[in-house]
Amino acid sequence: MKIESAIFRKGIRGDDRILNEDKPQIAFVGRSNVGKSSLLNCLLNRKDLVKSGKMPGKTREINFFLINGKYYFVDLPGYGFAKLPIDVREQIAKMIQWYFFQKVFHRKAVLVLDAKVGPNAMDLEMYRILRDQKEEVIIVANKIDALNQKERNTQLKLMAEEMPGVEIIPCSAKTKEGREKILEKIFS
Ligand SMILES: Nc1nc2c(ncn2[C@@H]2O[C@H](COP(=O)(O)OP(=O)(O)O)[C@@H](O)[C@H]2O)c(=O)[nH]1
Ligand SMILES: [Mg+2]
Image (cartoon, rainbow, N blue to C red; front, side):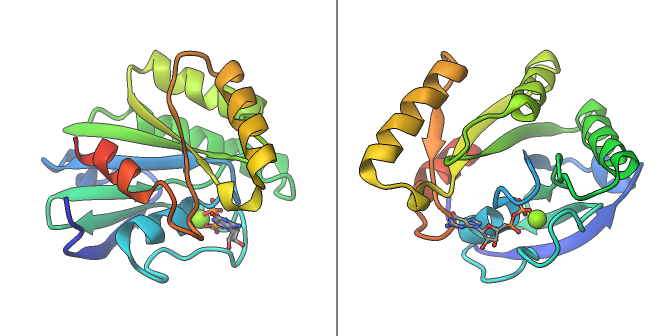
């Protein structure tokens, strides 16, 4: 499917009517600084619809973007930003869990990993939560451009071992590698 339009709708911090709308939600979740916002812009072919880079850990809202008038792309706050006070980190973790606890019309989760680092304990925990909640999950390994061919092979193999039986799509918000494949998964 082609991206025809992408509009910022709203940022929420708790219950909101937008959650009850009859539109599928595609929720992007991952560690702070992993490139969630950049990847969203890449998928949407937009330069900076979704604010990225500036202050990691600053987005503490769940941001809804209306795509083609039919879907919501949801940018969740990033977890695990070490420079934030522990109570703020806990608050963010709670907000993410709260969101996935909400029953919505339809939802897919895109779990964004860092290809250079692979899944850490928090990523694996996030994946466990999503699986327990029976969410449909698409796993992507972003920043693959930062690896050379040899590192890339090693990392992909390691990640496959750490998350057996699940497809991990290598991608880059920078080079747009993986973009088509991710969109295909999202809209299939
Ligand atoms: N090399 C590389 N850098 C990236 C990529 N995606 C994001 N970044 C950089 O990683 C930093 C964090 O990106 P951002 O989208 O704000 O991450 P977020 O906190 O997960 O939303 C920024 O400096 C981006 O330019 C990528 O695919 N490749
Ligand atoms: Mg962001």
